[in-house]
Length: 487
Ligand SMILES: Cc1ncc(COP(=O)(O)O)c(C=O)c1O
Image (cartoon, rainbow, N blue to C red; front, top):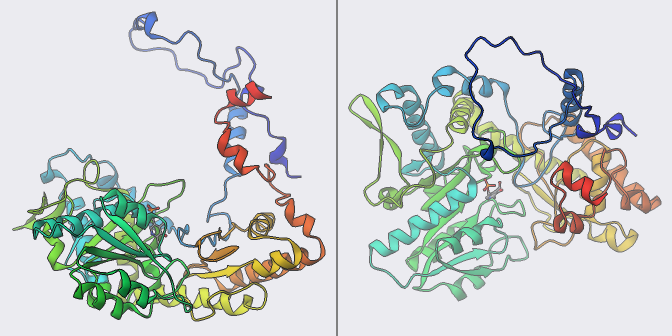
């Protein structure tokens, strides 16, 4: 067992009267305490020495798993490459020490960066305009759906209440459509992993507002029916929303705007190196075709003569949040694009696709491969056969990976694949890392055959053993006090 499991909680180390700081003598006039009725009667704080508190926080920081520790092949919402250079650039005082309420005459450099990023993202995706306002992928989806609604309403085409979404879409897509007031019609995926065209034709009509397509889909495939899908929707007066969270699969190769998409969003915190985890912070830039430019969220950055200013498009759907987006994330995305240049951008998608296909071909005889064709940036395996033969499921394999210091892939998603393991190596991992992962997966599958119990009880090498996830969700212990009450 590693030493972290012996770590004592900070409160358990507390000894009354112990202090961890030496305060300088006071050189300002003493102030009266606030009215005692406004003070809490008892605020228990741990009383520990400086060493104890430093060791405590250092030890819990080692319990985190991050891409700075090891390989993190979590499909779809992957933690990707976070160049330290981008952090340095985002921390420059001219970017870091400004406030969104400052007069724009004092923040011209920051606005210029945003303006250039808008242009670069529009060019990369082949679209006419960009808003950097949404602060997550799902928020960009909501913005896109609201723009599609505003577009139809503006044309007094009020009956368009339906949004069609293939069942291989990301889970946030239907939620965003519903939040924007649409009814969602789900259609199946065909046996090759593409959108089922017959099913699409059977539901599309003049009540269709649009279609939301995750491209590449959550089964890691580029939908080769794409041109037909766009034609079917457009012929019926609908618009196409592309979920391009995973733009790293197609960068420099495909411009969604040229295929006929009206909206596409990109998770800058995924494709363009903003570190994220635990829900944020992120940036979901949203790009649109010419017919939606006037509906973009407020604000966008416009160049007026020689100055940059925040402007509101004429029929804007309004604000997506406070101020104008998650600026630090925008700086990192801009730095990454400028570091790579045009050539480098192309190699992102080449490397992402080669890496995923390397894993696919090396593991195709080890795990099930429900859609065995060239994949995009990620590959979905299944543990179905292993479960049937040895009673070991996708969860057991994922938990055992932790013992080998590898973060689990996305499990049980996409929902259309039984015992799914969605693996995304990303473009920035080396062949050596991928070979290590291949070796470990094969090792785990051998363990499943010879010692399934080892996997049922994994992980073995972590401070916390396997959680009862149902109980943890129903009866969460969120503070030290909770652990005291029930223990
Ligand atoms: C394909 C896809 N769409 C949408 C999202 C939602 O993005 P966010 O988590 O930033 O809301 C994700 C998650 O990263 C995703 O992978």
